[in-house]
Length: 289
Image (cartoon, rainbow, N blue to C red; front, top):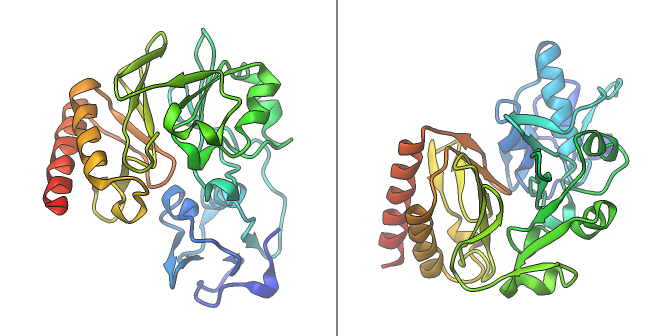
């Protein structure tokens, strides 16, 4: 629960607040940018929600927060069934982010031949029945070592295959399927794993049905720039390798949605998404020079 005695003083007055235990993961800001914003290295409420829809969106942020730092006074009743939250077609945001993955977003993709869990939320009793109802998990797709969280528990519950790159396998030694090198690999019908070393040596993106691209921490949308971005200040392995790997990605897959672990998600027209990715690679190469 959020701590009222630690309410962040920079937040606007009103019932909703963020406490100072916030770890600045940015989850609430990317999820509900009209209500939450950055202040001095943490998130705060920048506008109080209005109406039933605004309240619901604030609860979505509260449920997603990895440190339970978002609260309301008076508390009120938490709406049922906040997550999984529909994003596009069969793609759901699972909320319930983990502090161990610094609040990274995870996704469920419902598919007739086995659902995909992309990275991992916390393993919680509030989420389990909904995932059960949607058909469980057939494959756990790990984009990189940072966002493994409770993946082992989800895989064990459903007997799911787990995919990770060999360079990051030490974070999930129990994984059943290990990707190698930089070549694209078919995971299942319509599902392609593309290694993108850079953020970590074993970073991978997963392309599904030429529409949805799950990018971990390798590629995201920026609300502020209104464009695709990569995170140079969070590049743990090699910026030049990340630049080259995103160039290979542009030559390998088509996509309309960018669905990251950190950063904002966005839906675009496929040609626009391709142009923006190529432009980003050009900017990254210039920055590296």
